[in-house]
Length: 119
Image (tube, rainbow, N blue to C red; front, side):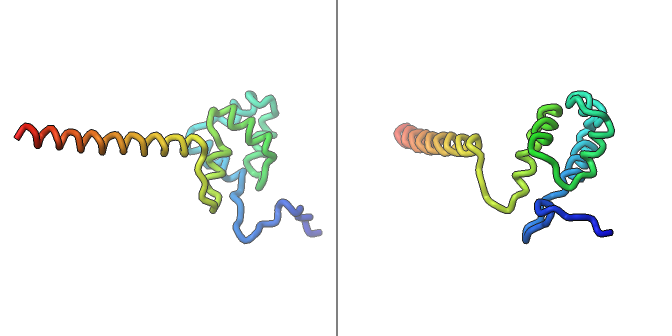
């Protein structure tokens, strides 16, 4: 008997990452203890193990795992989207960087003028 594939599991033209594989790789790379995460989430270790094989997970579960490991997994996943975007924090930093660059250019000009006056 063929397994029933739900609509949300059907990949579109741009496939989404396998969330369980993403979590397994992240936990392995960063030494995250799955059992400790399970305790933090208040779920059985077998439930946390089950998360590691799921193709898709509910937003709330990803949110809770992010809090448990103190890492924004949602942003990590969002960065994989083939859509260019900037977070409000990035926009603020870009604005600040532009202002600092403008100030630096003004100071360089001022410094050049002072050097020319001293000659």
